[in-house]
Length: 447
Image (tube, rainbow, N blue to C red; front, side, top):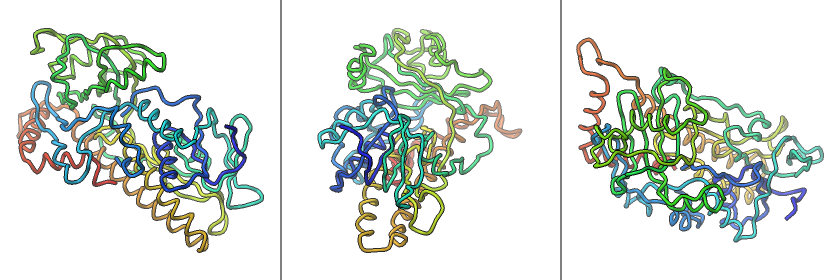
């Protein structure tokens, strides 16, 4: 299908957020949109709802792993656990769904294709300006020279959003917490691996805290293995596991493509003892060793938020300039700590579909400058929700990522890790705290 020269809505970015935006528009009976992406194909990396409301949750859920519990513990002991089954009265999906981004994208794109919608690839946006003949339209120029005219441009093109940059919208950290640039979660290593001799009956997802480390471990669903084979990357029969580990800054920068020995060292030093390769500490009959490395990455924890997720392109009178809207990582980024992942962006997408349809209908009878209040309300609400998630994840970073101290103070000769573990163990035994942890992890209070 060829790219038209004009559309009402242009969605830039075909990651999960952009795809869900398209599905949300279809759900509301709107078809005059185009979705483009700079990549020649969807993401083929592994990354971790409101999808029920637009009818595309079943296929995604069927390809993931439902975890009804998420624990935090020391290397040897579980300290606190969130029982997600306690959320049954609030949602039809009382669990954490583990599913990779490439599988999610494939399911969403398949759902779009069933409605006759395709993603136009590869189309990289290199220009964005007000249309010379109609000040309420925007001209979007692509790297290959083609231009499309749109009334509404939705930037779903990630943290380095071209749409946001070209629209002149600022993007910065809303709050700086003392010490956040120098804790054990400042730099993080990620990997998808397989293990030898792993106890498959003891692989529930969880966080492991140690004096100088923060380690996350969970199994990926079989659909991830299927996607690897379908993409021709690798054929793996064993279960693949995601590990995420904070690496102390004093150990230097994380290598770009670390060898197996480096990754095994992180598991042995910061992971639960049941994953250790040292038989002296692993309680299992045989030590657990990394077998294959499927994928690795590294990042530094940071947070930023757009000054506004809604603006009009260029200066002018109220109501002039094409509408620019930002969602997902183009509007906000935050640490993955806390399990929010891409959920916030998916909610942006679902609610934008509803708000944009309301706006388009209202503009048929009201002045544009008055109707803009609908989009301003959407922007204000989503901005507030993003700030809440950023504050939530920063709170986790500051508490669980604090540096180790041999003694808490002159009057308390106990090390900081022991105090932290005691506090978690005590509060973790309180049912209210367990329910509160499940509620925070679900994100249901930040829709």
